[in-house]
Length: 494
Image (cartoon, rainbow, N blue to C red; front, side):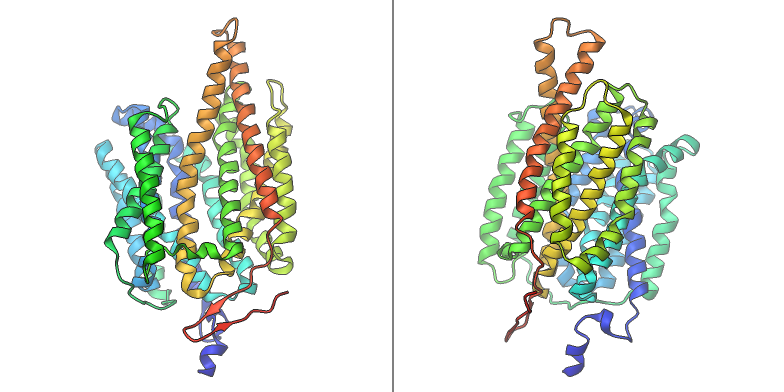
């Protein structure tokens, strides 16, 4: 009994080798997450290859988000039903099969089916990583570890578009998948040999109705906002309105059911822990801020500023790379100073960044955009991973799978909503400008209308970040709550 208490966390056990576990998970995560943005630059090529429309090819991205939105909520159930090793190898195998199907796809339908299998692997892999590291490492070391995870999560999508452009130009779009396969197979083999089981398999009861409500709820919301995000569909259109209403009603019923079940599919009681709730609010706001920049800013640079796609990508690259590279540093600072000294100043900087972007024009300098975008990405790296780690630190161990599942479910949901909201704001403002212009067909007027739309997007994002700053003022160092069946260990408040 004493030995168990001594080695409550496996990282403290000298007989447990942490490095192979970390390497297995991080290699798999890197290529799964890289895959999310690797395909974006090739969508135009795929339209020509398979003779499909933009609305059809968009399902390569929309379908990916949809599958992640449906599967991630049930990851808590799966994490408690299978061992870490089984989950990782199974997940990476599904991802690899999907990648292989994409590489040899003779038709667009086959390509899309492979892409959806990739989404299954990606959607389940991230909760596995977060849950495993929470179980292995004690709270005082999690900042550094999660910072390393953050490096992978941020760095992989940052280099995705650049790497994709090179591969597509030099080798062809199929090599976007072919080059990933050897690394995925290596990850499976490495995990098979070195990955050990972490945590306890409790085999919770499967509640079919909860799974159904979760699928309709999260899936409906992601689907509705993905349709609306195409910019040509009204929120009152049937393909948007009905999935949205069905999703909202299903989620309400889902939450009510989870509160009644002894073994909920997704335990929403995690929101009883204040620091987790604060972390979720900050996470949503950060996702919104990221989407307002990663989607709208390239449109602004390639439109009114008349920059080439390659130049626009290079302008954003320093900020994106710094965001990834600084993540481990922010993790160490989190371990040393706690969340407040990182998150509050970074939230204030984020407010200033959004205000600056809301003042862009036809003559805004490239230098200002580069510097402001760097500040944006640095502030995000100082908020996102520290807030997530702090929020999860405050949960009892039995709620780790549920906390990680909720955090990771919010990513595709917030992403779909962010795309829809900001593109709608921009296009509506742009159209309104053109409707009142004396010469709406001139190039100058069209550029001015887009600038007007971009300004309004960032003004709305500015409002979001002000809310985020006030939320950050409530953050404090989360107290680990280690619950057992008989007692609760009281943590010392620092």
